[in-house]
Image (tube, rainbow, N blue to C red; front, top):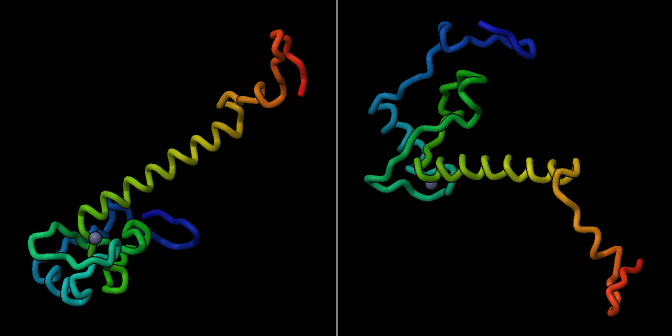
Length: 122
Ligand SMILES: [Zn+2]
């Protein structure tokens, strides 16, 4: 058990265990959410791979109530994860540019090469 922001959480080694959903519960949740994927809002068709997702990460709240559960295509979940990774990589690039790790191309803007090869300020 550990404490954060004044709230108590159980670790994976503590009392709480991530719930595994029985076939019956999966069917119940599927019907509750009318077979709709919460990521693409599309219908989950028979034969599609799908899973039950926690809206608020289970690790934070251990909330297995219907309010915190949604259906998602496994394919959509993978796209979402890939997007997150891209966003993080992009943020890294912007940061690199900001601290000067990316070489600036200021020369061509500040200086002008004359016909005789002489470089003069603009
Ligand atoms: Zn989907």
